[in-house]
Length: 210
Image (tube, rainbow, N blue to C red; front, side, top):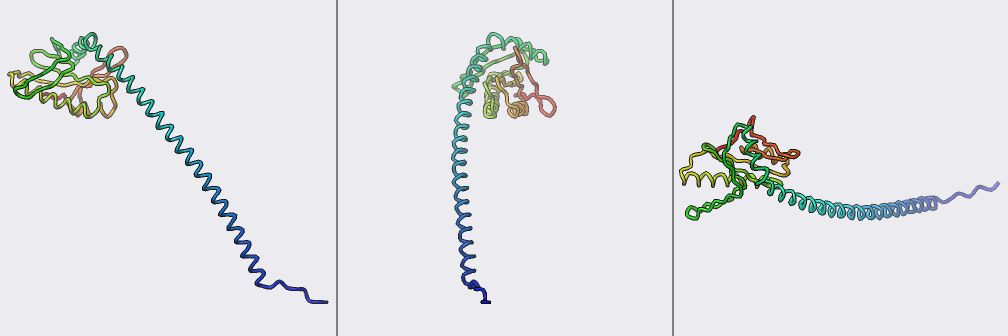
């Protein structure tokens, strides 16, 4: 019986290398396919993100317009509803005011004191200065502090020894802005149903006087 032919070792090694190359090529093609799929998915995701941003901007723009309308209505309500009710609401807090004005303006060219006051409440001992904003922010609160300092200076120049307090009214009051307002010693005035509430600085915060 003749001896069976044996496969040369170099042939076996070549087959293994060829198989490895084919497997590597397959894996590379699979990787390319996944990369292309991920690229398409990323492109789709980017488009979705852009669409979401566009919708958010449009929603924000609509909200700003709505707030603007609310703010205008709120401003119009000051003379006819808010001012008389402010006197009543502050009276419930133990602050009795006998006079109320709106859209007051201080112009003292000699001493360079210029400011505007949305609502001015007064009695023989105290004055309450109310600033009205659509959506109060930290800058609005800081500006109201500057306004109070100007009014204090103006009052001293005119021998007005009454104590000045401040309040901020907002159509929409954010939680952090509300806390900041109270922390600075201002009263917070915000809508509640058909009327509004006044929140007094309490606890760690106290009404500041100028």
